[in-house]
Image (cartoon, rainbow, N blue to C red; front, side, top):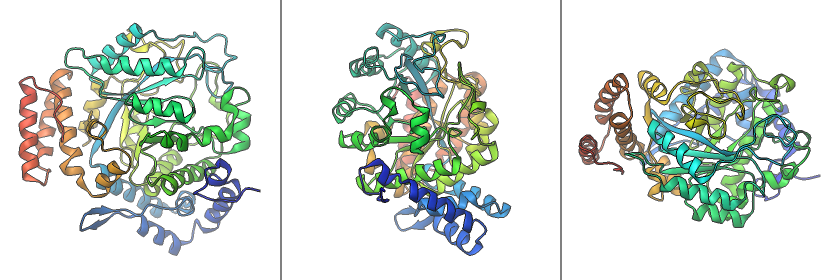
Length: 481
């Protein structure tokens, strides 16, 4: 029987079933242990230091106790601390991005995904480079600067060469004042050699959702295709980091397996990356299973209500304080709004989950990977964020200045957000307002920028930021700290 070892490179040792089961039992036994709960909450709370802000984070056992705790006032305290942590490390910025689906050809048999091989009535599509160019121009014309490319696993239709060529195409397009400055990549687990190629192509974050950490369920849900190999999939982030990729993004598909098990596994994976590579996940995503062609989420009887979903988000924020947390348009406006106050720091806007969807006037449904709940335009999402006190950020400066991996985490931990990320967010917001926003959104945004500039503590940085923002009005672009 495999023994738990966070420093191991073997999936069944760093995501250890016996340790997860023991953790869940420990959490159940201690969910009303007020002395322990208060101790964990105190550990999680952000603390000011001489160099900025410090946050200890939580172990998978500590975080699982908080997730199990159902004492109302303690749950409220979890939410309060989650918001404090998010504000301490990310401020009131919310990073904006959009997914770009390149191909839905796939040879896997995943039971929860409409791209599965046996689905004969979904329209199979793969974008040509010219079609990618058209999609990217459509996204640039909305105002997007950051994309996450998605495609099914198919070595014949979607080889690594196609991915690399597509990334090159995306970065090459400058339409009017538009430019995609960061391409994140969500593709199937691959080799160290291929991860090196992705790194050389200039990708941002490599994203791979685990779907489920429960090995038996994983193998049942992936009955055919290369994705059936649990160990190869689960160990992908180690190969990616070995291949030189600094920033990796984790996520599970909540609703496939019991959420407490998934939660513990997710935190253990973050602990493993920290233990082995010295830096945890750059992002953690929290997708929930949704309706899609040939897929009925009711088949999966582990779906979670909104209240528990929001609690999971808050507990992840307490456990992994420095990570970027992502919520997509799978979720409704209402759920996304509440999640923003519980630790989320990145959201997608105006997403289309079909191949070639952005160039279509009407939202196509024949090749969607899942139903989109939040169908607002990017302008509507940007305005909504600002009306609720958030700064929509299109910033990609850290990636382009080489502040990735442990260098980004050092910046984050040193509390330099207000002198670096905060002005960068305002600069890119000003670009969006001048180039793409409706009159109403522009008015709200300009007032917000004026107010937020005064929060920059360093006078020199504040003066420079104001200067950059003024220059944007006269046509200059792409300033950054």
